[in-house]
Amino acid sequence: MAIQKEQIKTALAHVLHPEKKVDIVSLDMIQDIIVQDKYVSFTLEMPAQNGPLAQELSQRCEGAIHKFIDRDAVIDIQIGINVSQQRQTPPPAPELEPTASPLSGVKNIIAVASGKGGVGKSTVAVNLAAALARNGAKVGLMDADIYGPSIPTMFDLFERPDITVQKKLIPLEKYGIKLVSMGFLVDVNQAMVWRGPMVTSAIKQFMNDVEWGELDFMILDLPPGTGDIQLTIVQSVPLSGAVIISTPQNVALDDVRKGVAMFHKVNVPVLGVIENMAYFSPPDAPQKKYYIFGQGGASRLADELAVPVLGEIPLEQPIRESGDNGKPIVLADQESAAAASFLACSANMQQQLAIRAAQMPKHLSISFTGKSPSAHT
Ligand SMILES: Nc1ncnc2c1ncn2[C@@H]1O[C@H](COP(=O)(O)OP(=O)(O)OP(=O)(O)O)[C@@H](O)[C@H]1O
Ligand SMILES: [Mg+2]
Image 1 (spheres, rainbow, N blue to C red):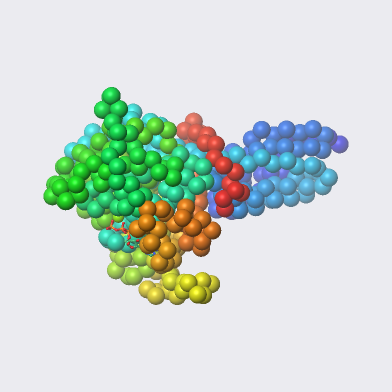
Image 2: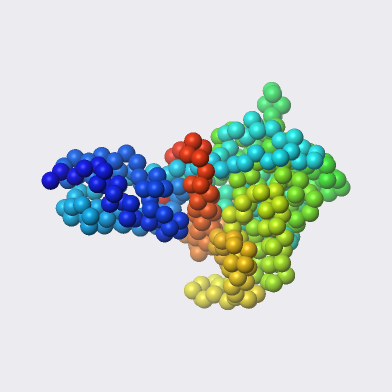
Protein backbone atom coordinates (compact mmCIF):
# COMPACT_ATOMS: atom_id res chain seq x y z
CA MET A 1 0.00 0.00 0.00
CA ALA A 2 1.31 3.50 -0.85
CA ILE A 3 2.61 5.49 2.10
CA GLN A 4 0.68 8.63 3.11
CA LYS A 5 2.30 11.95 4.08
CA GLU A 6 0.45 12.08 7.41
CA GLN A 7 1.82 8.68 8.37
CA ILE A 8 5.33 10.09 8.07
CA LYS A 9 4.66 12.83 10.63
CA THR A 10 3.01 10.38 12.99
CA ALA A 11 5.99 8.03 12.77
CA LEU A 12 8.57 10.81 13.15
CA ALA A 13 6.75 12.12 16.22
CA HIS A 14 8.33 9.11 17.97
CA VAL A 15 11.79 10.61 17.47
CA LEU A 16 12.83 12.75 20.42
CA HIS A 17 15.45 15.48 20.28
CA PRO A 18 17.99 14.14 22.81
CA GLU A 19 18.63 17.50 24.51
CA LYS A 20 15.26 19.19 24.31
CA LYS A 21 13.35 16.00 25.15
CA VAL A 22 10.66 17.03 22.69
CA ASP A 23 9.79 15.20 19.48
CA ILE A 24 11.24 16.57 16.25
CA VAL A 25 7.83 17.10 14.62
CA SER A 26 6.68 19.38 17.45
CA LEU A 27 10.00 21.21 17.14
CA ASP A 28 9.13 21.88 13.47
CA MET A 29 12.29 20.15 12.31
CA ILE A 30 10.61 18.16 9.52
CA GLN A 31 9.95 20.06 6.30
CA ASP A 32 9.20 19.40 2.62
CA ILE A 33 7.87 15.86 2.94
CA ILE A 34 7.51 14.14 -0.43
CA VAL A 35 6.02 10.67 -0.68
CA GLN A 36 5.78 8.58 -3.79
CA ASP A 37 4.70 5.00 -3.36
CA LYS A 38 7.52 3.61 -1.12
CA TYR A 39 9.86 6.53 -1.68
CA VAL A 40 9.96 9.09 1.16
CA SER A 41 11.99 12.28 1.17
CA PHE A 42 12.07 15.19 3.63
CA THR A 43 14.34 17.85 5.08
CA LEU A 44 15.55 17.59 8.65
CA GLU A 45 15.98 21.23 9.71
CA MET A 46 18.82 21.43 12.22
CA PRO A 47 18.73 24.55 14.37
CA ALA A 48 22.53 24.56 14.52
CA GLN A 49 25.43 22.92 12.78
CA ASN A 50 25.90 19.62 14.52
CA GLY A 51 26.97 16.76 12.27
CA PRO A 52 26.84 13.93 14.83
CA LEU A 53 23.38 14.96 16.02
CA ALA A 54 22.10 15.30 12.42
CA GLN A 55 23.41 11.82 11.69
CA GLU A 56 21.91 10.34 14.85
CA LEU A 57 18.51 11.93 14.21
CA SER A 58 18.53 10.81 10.55
CA GLN A 59 19.14 7.22 11.64
CA ARG A 60 16.34 7.41 14.18
CA CYS A 61 14.00 8.88 11.55
CA GLU A 62 14.76 6.02 9.20
CA GLY A 63 14.25 3.56 12.03
CA ALA A 64 10.89 5.08 12.94
CA ILE A 65 9.59 4.99 9.35
CA HIS A 66 10.75 1.41 8.89
CA LYS A 67 9.27 0.34 12.22
CA PHE A 68 5.92 2.15 12.17
CA ILE A 69 5.11 2.36 8.44
CA ASP A 70 6.96 0.13 6.04
CA ARG A 71 10.24 -1.69 6.47
CA ASP A 72 10.85 -1.51 2.72
CA ALA A 73 10.45 2.27 2.51
CA VAL A 74 13.25 4.02 0.61
CA ILE A 75 14.18 7.11 2.59
CA ASP A 76 16.05 10.21 1.46
CA ILE A 77 16.79 12.80 4.16
CA GLN A 78 18.23 16.24 3.39
CA ILE A 79 19.86 18.18 6.21
CA GLY A 80 18.95 21.86 6.39
CA ILE A 81 20.56 24.35 8.74
CA ASN A 82 18.54 27.13 10.19
CA VAL A 83 20.33 29.60 12.42
CA SER A 84 17.67 31.60 14.15
CA GLN A 85 17.84 35.16 15.26
CA GLN A 86 17.70 35.54 18.98
CA ARG A 87 18.29 39.08 19.99
CA GLN A 88 16.62 41.26 22.49
CA THR A 89 16.35 45.01 22.43
CA PRO A 90 17.93 46.22 25.62
CA PRO A 91 16.72 49.08 27.73
CA PRO A 92 18.76 52.25 27.12
CA ALA A 93 21.94 52.28 29.16
CA PRO A 94 22.81 55.41 31.15
CA GLU A 95 25.22 56.88 28.58
CA LEU A 96 23.95 55.11 25.52
CA GLU A 97 20.89 55.16 23.32
CA PRO A 98 21.03 51.91 21.40
CA THR A 99 20.07 52.19 17.76
CA ALA A 100 18.70 49.00 16.28
CA SER A 101 19.11 49.68 12.56
CA PRO A 102 22.91 49.50 12.04
CA LEU A 103 22.88 45.97 13.40
CA SER A 104 19.73 44.83 11.67
CA GLY A 105 21.75 42.43 9.49
CA VAL A 106 23.30 40.73 12.53
CA LYS A 107 21.35 37.68 13.64
CA ASN A 108 23.07 36.75 16.89
CA ILE A 109 25.35 38.79 19.15
CA ILE A 110 27.19 36.77 21.76
CA ALA A 111 29.29 38.27 24.53
CA VAL A 112 32.32 36.36 25.78
CA ALA A 113 32.93 37.41 29.36
CA SER A 114 34.86 36.51 32.47
CA GLY A 115 34.85 37.75 36.00
CA LYS A 116 38.62 37.58 36.11
CA GLY A 117 41.38 38.72 33.74
CA GLY A 118 43.75 36.42 31.92
CA VAL A 119 41.54 33.33 31.90
CA GLY A 120 41.64 33.07 28.12
CA LYS A 121 38.60 35.07 27.17
CA SER A 122 40.14 36.51 24.02
CA THR A 123 41.63 33.15 23.07
CA VAL A 124 38.20 31.54 23.33
CA ALA A 125 36.40 34.44 21.60
CA VAL A 126 38.79 34.28 18.65
CA ASN A 127 38.57 30.50 18.34
CA LEU A 128 34.78 30.46 18.65
CA ALA A 129 34.61 33.02 15.84
CA ALA A 130 37.03 30.89 13.80
CA ALA A 131 35.02 27.72 14.48
CA LEU A 132 31.80 29.37 13.33
CA ALA A 133 33.49 30.77 10.22
CA ARG A 134 35.07 27.39 9.48
CA ASN A 135 31.58 25.91 9.46
CA GLY A 136 30.42 28.39 6.84
CA ALA A 137 28.74 31.06 8.99
CA LYS A 138 29.20 34.79 8.41
CA VAL A 139 31.05 36.00 11.48
CA GLY A 140 32.15 39.29 13.02
CA LEU A 141 34.37 39.76 16.05
CA MET A 142 34.30 42.94 18.07
CA ASP A 143 37.08 43.60 20.53
CA ALA A 144 35.24 45.45 23.28
CA ASP A 145 38.33 45.26 25.49
CA ILE A 146 39.31 48.85 24.95
CA TYR A 147 42.03 48.85 27.61
CA GLY A 148 43.70 45.65 26.53
CA PRO A 149 42.76 44.81 22.94
CA SER A 150 44.11 41.40 21.89
CA ILE A 151 42.50 40.95 18.49
CA PRO A 152 45.24 42.75 16.48
CA THR A 153 47.90 40.37 17.84
CA MET A 154 45.73 37.30 17.66
CA PHE A 155 45.06 38.02 13.97
CA ASP A 156 48.46 39.59 13.25
CA LEU A 157 46.66 42.60 11.86
CA PHE A 158 47.81 46.13 12.53
CA GLU A 159 46.26 48.10 9.67
CA ARG A 160 43.92 51.02 9.91
CA PRO A 161 40.42 50.28 8.64
CA ASP A 162 38.98 52.36 5.76
CA ILE A 163 36.03 54.67 6.16
CA THR A 164 33.10 55.01 3.72
CA VAL A 165 31.85 58.36 2.41
CA GLN A 166 29.05 58.07 4.98
CA LYS A 167 31.82 58.02 7.62
CA LYS A 168 31.25 54.39 8.49
CA LEU A 169 34.16 52.21 9.46
CA ILE A 170 34.77 49.19 7.22
CA PRO A 171 35.80 46.24 9.40
CA LEU A 172 39.09 44.60 8.55
CA GLU A 173 38.69 41.01 7.43
CA LYS A 174 40.91 37.99 7.95
CA TYR A 175 40.17 34.26 7.65
CA GLY A 176 36.65 35.30 6.60
CA ILE A 177 35.99 37.05 9.93
CA LYS A 178 35.11 40.75 10.09
CA LEU A 179 37.14 42.44 12.80
CA VAL A 180 36.94 45.67 14.74
CA SER A 181 39.26 46.55 17.60
CA MET A 182 40.34 49.70 19.34
CA GLY A 183 43.83 48.39 18.66
CA PHE A 184 43.30 49.20 14.95
CA LEU A 185 42.35 52.78 15.70
CA VAL A 186 44.26 54.40 18.54
CA ASP A 187 47.43 53.98 20.48
CA VAL A 188 46.52 51.56 23.26
CA ASN A 189 48.52 53.59 25.77
CA GLN A 190 46.17 56.49 25.06
CA ALA A 191 43.07 54.38 25.64
CA MET A 192 44.47 53.23 28.99
CA VAL A 193 43.59 56.57 30.55
CA TRP A 194 40.06 56.71 29.15
CA ARG A 195 37.28 56.96 31.64
CA GLY A 196 34.08 54.91 31.59
CA PRO A 197 31.92 57.19 29.42
CA MET A 198 34.64 57.39 26.76
CA VAL A 199 34.83 53.62 26.67
CA THR A 200 31.10 53.19 26.31
CA SER A 201 30.87 55.82 23.60
CA ALA A 202 33.62 53.97 21.70
CA ILE A 203 31.60 50.74 21.98
CA LYS A 204 28.55 52.63 20.77
CA GLN A 205 30.50 53.64 17.68
CA PHE A 206 31.65 50.07 17.15
CA MET A 207 28.00 49.08 17.11
CA ASN A 208 26.49 51.91 15.14
CA ASP A 209 29.19 53.38 12.93
CA VAL A 210 30.66 50.21 11.50
CA GLU A 211 29.52 48.58 8.25
CA TRP A 212 28.97 45.15 9.74
CA GLY A 213 26.62 44.04 6.94
CA GLU A 214 24.97 40.63 7.12
CA LEU A 215 26.30 38.41 9.89
CA ASP A 216 25.08 35.14 11.36
CA PHE A 217 27.11 35.72 14.51
CA MET A 218 28.89 38.60 16.11
CA ILE A 219 31.22 37.65 18.95
CA LEU A 220 32.00 40.33 21.48
CA ASP A 221 35.24 40.01 23.45
CA LEU A 222 34.44 41.89 26.66
CA PRO A 223 36.95 43.47 29.03
CA PRO A 224 37.57 41.28 32.09
CA GLY A 225 35.46 41.80 35.19
CA THR A 226 31.88 42.52 36.13
CA GLY A 227 32.10 46.20 37.01
CA ASP A 228 30.33 49.29 35.70
CA ILE A 229 32.04 49.31 32.32
CA GLN A 230 31.10 45.72 31.56
CA LEU A 231 27.57 46.29 32.79
CA THR A 232 27.12 49.37 30.62
CA ILE A 233 28.45 47.55 27.55
CA VAL A 234 26.16 44.56 27.98
CA GLN A 235 23.22 46.89 28.49
CA SER A 236 23.97 48.85 25.36
CA VAL A 237 24.30 45.93 22.97
CA PRO A 238 21.30 43.84 21.88
CA LEU A 239 22.80 40.56 23.04
CA SER A 240 21.43 37.12 22.19
CA GLY A 241 23.40 35.50 24.98
CA ALA A 242 26.62 35.32 26.91
CA VAL A 243 29.34 32.73 27.28
CA ILE A 244 31.40 32.83 30.46
CA ILE A 245 35.01 31.72 30.52
CA SER A 246 36.48 30.19 33.61
CA THR A 247 39.54 28.29 34.71
CA PRO A 248 39.18 25.38 37.12
CA GLN A 249 40.51 27.06 40.29
CA ASN A 250 37.94 27.78 42.98
CA VAL A 251 38.79 31.48 42.99
CA ALA A 252 37.96 31.66 39.28
CA LEU A 253 34.67 29.87 39.89
CA ASP A 254 33.65 32.56 42.35
CA ASP A 255 34.05 35.03 39.51
CA VAL A 256 31.78 32.93 37.30
CA ARG A 257 29.01 33.48 39.85
CA LYS A 258 29.50 37.23 39.50
CA GLY A 259 29.44 36.97 35.70
CA VAL A 260 26.23 34.96 35.68
CA ALA A 261 24.66 37.44 38.11
CA MET A 262 25.63 40.39 35.90
CA PHE A 263 23.93 38.91 32.84
CA HIS A 264 20.85 37.90 34.81
CA LYS A 265 20.58 41.46 36.04
CA VAL A 266 20.22 42.71 32.46
CA ASN A 267 18.12 39.73 31.31
CA VAL A 268 20.71 38.31 28.94
CA PRO A 269 20.62 34.50 28.83
CA VAL A 270 23.85 32.80 29.85
CA LEU A 271 24.37 30.16 27.16
CA GLY A 272 26.99 28.38 29.22
CA VAL A 273 30.41 28.23 30.78
CA ILE A 274 33.58 27.20 28.96
CA GLU A 275 36.31 25.87 31.20
CA ASN A 276 39.64 26.97 29.76
CA MET A 277 43.00 25.46 30.72
CA ALA A 278 40.91 22.60 32.13
CA TYR A 279 43.63 19.98 31.85
CA PHE A 280 47.13 19.44 30.51
CA SER A 281 47.99 16.78 27.93
CA PRO A 282 51.72 16.23 27.45
CA PRO A 283 52.74 16.46 23.78
CA ASP A 284 54.41 13.03 24.01
CA ALA A 285 51.30 11.42 25.57
CA PRO A 286 48.34 13.38 24.15
CA GLN A 287 45.82 10.76 25.33
CA LYS A 288 46.61 11.59 28.99
CA LYS A 289 44.79 14.39 30.77
CA TYR A 290 46.26 15.94 33.91
CA TYR A 291 43.76 18.05 35.81
CA ILE A 292 46.37 20.31 37.39
CA PHE A 293 43.90 22.74 38.94
CA GLY A 294 41.34 20.13 39.99
CA GLN A 295 38.51 18.52 38.09
CA GLY A 296 34.78 19.00 37.85
CA GLY A 297 34.60 22.47 39.42
CA ALA A 298 32.89 24.08 36.44
CA SER A 299 30.28 21.36 36.13
CA ARG A 300 29.47 21.50 39.86
CA LEU A 301 29.08 25.24 39.62
CA ALA A 302 27.09 24.96 36.41
CA ASP A 303 24.68 22.61 38.21
CA GLU A 304 24.40 25.04 41.10
CA LEU A 305 23.69 27.98 38.79
CA ALA A 306 21.61 25.97 36.30
CA VAL A 307 23.90 26.97 33.45
CA PRO A 308 25.31 24.39 31.00
CA VAL A 309 29.02 23.65 30.57
CA LEU A 310 29.73 24.15 26.86
CA GLY A 311 33.09 22.41 26.96
CA GLU A 312 36.63 22.09 28.29
CA ILE A 313 39.68 23.53 26.56
CA PRO A 314 43.09 21.98 27.29
CA LEU A 315 46.10 23.96 28.48
CA GLU A 316 48.45 23.65 25.53
CA GLN A 317 51.45 25.46 24.21
CA PRO A 318 50.16 25.47 20.58
CA ILE A 319 47.03 27.36 21.70
CA ARG A 320 49.20 30.15 23.10
CA GLU A 321 51.59 30.07 20.16
CA SER A 322 48.83 30.29 17.57
CA GLY A 323 47.38 33.27 19.45
CA ASP A 324 50.75 34.98 19.45
CA ASN A 325 51.35 34.12 15.80
CA GLY A 326 48.11 35.60 14.53
CA LYS A 327 46.21 32.48 13.44
CA PRO A 328 43.69 30.85 15.81
CA ILE A 329 44.43 27.17 16.50
CA VAL A 330 41.04 26.18 15.02
CA LEU A 331 42.44 27.32 11.68
CA ALA A 332 46.18 26.85 12.25
CA ASP A 333 45.96 23.16 13.20
CA GLN A 334 42.53 22.08 12.09
CA GLU A 335 42.81 18.42 13.07
CA SER A 336 44.27 19.01 16.55
CA ALA A 337 42.52 17.99 19.75
CA ALA A 338 42.54 21.66 20.78
CA ALA A 339 40.71 22.66 17.58
CA ALA A 340 38.18 19.87 18.22
CA SER A 341 37.55 21.19 21.74
CA PHE A 342 36.77 24.69 20.42
CA LEU A 343 34.56 23.27 17.66
CA ALA A 344 32.64 21.29 20.28
CA CYS A 345 32.14 24.44 22.38
CA SER A 346 30.91 26.30 19.30
CA ALA A 347 28.45 23.50 18.44
CA ASN A 348 27.15 23.42 22.03
CA MET A 349 26.81 27.19 22.08
CA GLN A 350 24.75 27.09 18.88
CA GLN A 351 22.69 24.32 20.41
CA GLN A 352 21.91 26.50 23.42
CA LEU A 353 20.99 29.41 21.14
CA ALA A 354 18.75 27.09 19.16
CA ILE A 355 17.02 25.84 22.29
CA ARG A 356 16.20 29.44 23.17
CA ALA A 357 15.18 30.25 19.59
CA ALA A 358 12.80 27.27 19.57
CA GLN A 359 11.00 28.91 22.48
CA MET A 360 10.59 32.15 20.51
CA PRO A 361 7.80 33.06 18.06
CA LYS A 362 8.25 31.31 14.70
CA HIS A 363 8.39 34.48 12.60
CA LEU A 364 11.81 35.37 14.05
CA SER A 365 13.38 32.31 12.46
CA ILE A 366 15.76 33.22 9.65
CA SER A 367 17.38 30.73 7.30
CA PHE A 368 21.10 30.45 6.95
CA THR A 369 22.75 28.30 4.37
CA GLY A 370 25.96 26.92 5.82
CA LYS A 371 28.14 24.11 4.62
CA SER A 372 26.99 20.58 5.23
CA PRO A 373 27.48 19.86 8.94
CA SER A 374 29.11 16.54 8.21
CA ALA A 375 31.96 18.33 6.48
CA HIS A 376 33.29 19.72 9.73
CA THR A 377 32.26 17.82 12.76
N1 LIG B 1 44.07 26.93 26.74
C1 LIG B 1 45.21 27.62 26.70
N2 LIG B 1 46.41 27.00 26.60
C2 LIG B 1 47.56 27.73 26.59
N3 LIG B 1 47.64 29.05 26.68
C3 LIG B 1 46.46 29.72 26.78
C4 LIG B 1 45.20 29.05 26.79
N4 LIG B 1 44.22 29.99 26.90
C5 LIG B 1 44.85 31.19 26.94
N5 LIG B 1 46.18 31.03 26.88
C6 LIG B 1 47.21 32.08 26.92
O1 LIG B 1 47.03 32.79 28.14
C7 LIG B 1 47.22 34.18 27.93
C8 LIG B 1 45.94 34.94 28.35
O2 LIG B 1 44.92 34.56 27.44
P1 LIG B 1 43.88 35.65 26.87
O3 LIG B 1 44.56 36.88 26.43
O4 LIG B 1 43.01 34.94 25.89
O5 LIG B 1 43.08 35.92 28.21
P2 LIG B 1 41.99 37.05 28.52
O6 LIG B 1 41.04 36.47 29.51
O7 LIG B 1 41.42 37.57 27.27
O8 LIG B 1 42.90 38.14 29.20
P3 LIG B 1 42.47 39.66 29.53
O9 LIG B 1 41.70 39.57 30.79
O10 LIG B 1 43.79 40.33 29.68
O11 LIG B 1 41.67 40.15 28.38
C9 LIG B 1 47.59 34.34 26.48
O12 LIG B 1 48.98 34.35 26.35
C10 LIG B 1 47.02 33.09 25.81
O13 LIG B 1 47.74 32.71 24.65
MG1 LIG C 1 41.39 39.53 26.50
